[in-house]
Image (tube, rainbow, N blue to C red; front, side):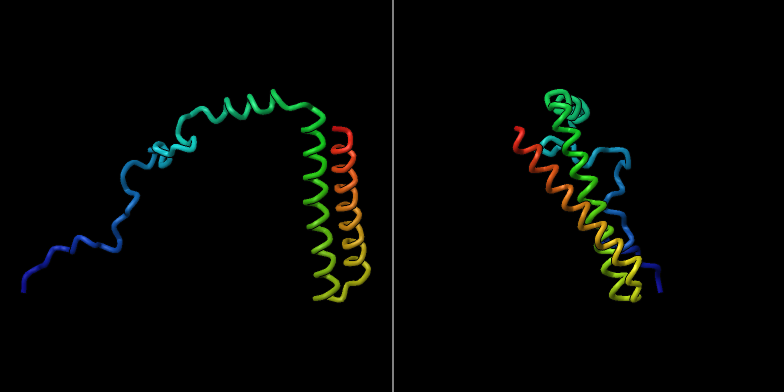
Length: 111
């Protein structure tokens, strides 16, 4: 009875065990690994207008808050029968989504 060496297809062998600090996207032709992405982002922000950025942030925050509060309100009503809190959250979420639509249309009309 001799000791056999482990097979080459060891299931515990780390396939990514080379260099943990090596960029895995260094050879990506789409733009990864060049170390220039910070400059690209800075250039994109400098080319855009301040009103576009503010409108985007306003609409994004209102949509996220509206979806969260409306869905949470509906779940509170459906699962826990908390009509007052759930109803207030659902109505507030729908109002936030409505404000997001109004803000988007106002910005689009201005452009």
